[in-house]
Amino acid sequence: MRRRICPASGALAAALLAVFLFAREAPAQTTAPLASLRTAEIGDLLRRGRELELQRRWGEAVAHYEEAVRQFPGEASLQRRFDYTRLHYDVNRRYADRSFRLLLAQLTLQQALDLYSEVMLKLQAHYVEMPKWKELVERGTNDFEVALSEAAFLETQAGTVDQPALDAFRRELRQVLGPMMVQSRSDAAAAVATAAQLAQQRIGLAPSAVVLEYTCGATNSLDPYSAYLTPDQLAEVYSQIEGNFVGLGVELKAQDGALLIVRVIPGSPAEQSGVVAGDRITAVDDQPTAQYSTDQAANLLQGEEGTVVNLTLLGADQKPRRAAVRRQRVEVPSVDTVKILEGTDHVGYLRLTCFQKTTPQDLDNALWALHRAGMKSLIMDLRGNPGGLLITAVEVADRFIPNGVIVSTHGRSVQEDFTYSAHEPGTWRVPLVVLIDQDSASAAEIFAGAIRDHRRGIVVGARSYGKGSVQGIFALNCAQAGVRLTTAKFYSPNGSPYAGIGVEPNILVHQAARPVQEGQAIPSSAGDDAILAAGIQAVQQVVAQR
View 1 (tube, rainbow, N blue to C red):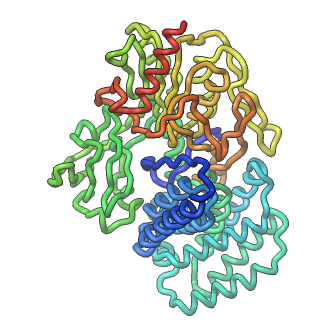
View 2: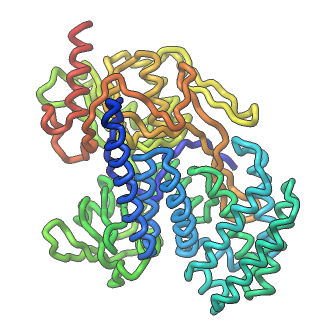
View 3: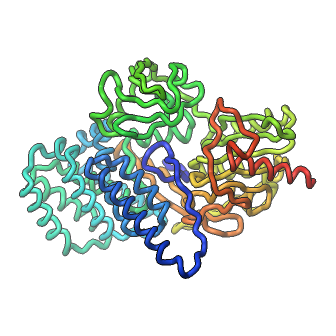
């Protein structure tokens, strides 16, 4: 089974607020001071990251380095630390995942090798680049060696192993695998089987666990978006596509030993129980979150539909309070703010949060509601939108573009080469402005880029994220798990790539404010939200010129 998506990057569920740096050509005499300043800033970022590493706060370290890499693209020292911390984060995340541990406990060595072979077959058939089998095995070895340094792995798979034995095994493993010829998928599987058997013989590791580390290491290191998906992660991806899930209805990120609530979904059980954005969860069912990793603490929030979880919360007043929240099915709206902006000549506003299966219908409902309210022009806010389904981005763009190419995709397989075009019936011709920022990614970039290239509207804000690839979701036949693989890259109607470049707005606003949240007043003056104010000015100028 396969779904085509284009999600954004991000180690944590909630996007982190970023700092914009706009490079300008400097006079020759200032080159040295600027270079010195850059070196100092990078040094500070590395020192802060190292502090998080030493505390083994891997989730926060990944988020820190991810933002640092975006601040200083191409800086090798930051990229190396990001790759290193992501390996540690992934291992701990897997072993905090109950579905992964249950699957692992059931797998024999042969079943694990069958799983590895199936993943490699899907990679060979669908990945955007031809696999380099030797490199995949080496990446698997790197992942496995990281796992050998993590208590979460060793405690469940090896019991007590002394450090000299581990060091000797690492050396022997490299000596055995190094000379092996790995030129095909079967060669890779044979090398992994050798590693698993050696680990069992030398340090008593469960061989199936070794094979899964090689599987995860191979897929997760392909690119920032490809990954092995545990059973729960696969189910979560499908829930995101469908736009609903069982839970509390909050988005979280780690902060100082607690879980910070960055968003509460309107109408969710959390909202009904009085939970608000900005609250910090310090305990779950009386278990302090500080004693768990971020993923372990987040897993405590999961449970069967209808069950209750008791949260200890710390609000803005720093006074602890308790909330009992019943886990229920949560419908995630992809359009969560729809209004006519006050103080304007009937400028409609809607905020599009993602591109899921329900988005076209959600958008249609919003557009007709605004039309009935007298909308004369429209602002679509895509700030912070991480993307979603490619076909949904096409359908949304088709609401506004009468004809021509919306987006094209190109992959290694001719099956991935496709051009998506607009159709005139059902096209809205209302004057349009699209707001974007550095966290607008993937499907959001497809929409904004199509609007810009066709000159259908004005794009306002900051350069978008720059994710220009399509991922396929593939369920595995031999296990209730899956893989997410990059299968193609996508290009704007003018043929320009998005990867690493993003969408350049027609009107660049240097200070990006956060998107308006449901329940907050939508500003109509530049003092509150510079991007929105610029968007209002732009759309009103378009209306005045008609």
